[in-house]
Length: 83
Image (tube, rainbow, N blue to C red; front, side, top):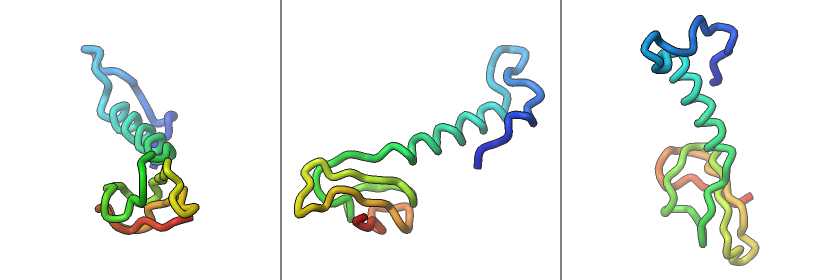
């Protein structure tokens, strides 16, 4: 979930470091960007690539027309489906 910008009182602490709210916002945005960028590798990710649900994976070899996968379940290396 992305934190609404309107709720920020300050972006930085007096010493110039990000406030806790700013750090949480940056973390949330980074997570969304990372999940929207596919992991690229060779072969199926099943049993090999650890990711969170919704992560995309692209097989750069395209073996047997298997090119794009999405992580459907779990947070380990299983739960990938071919799309």
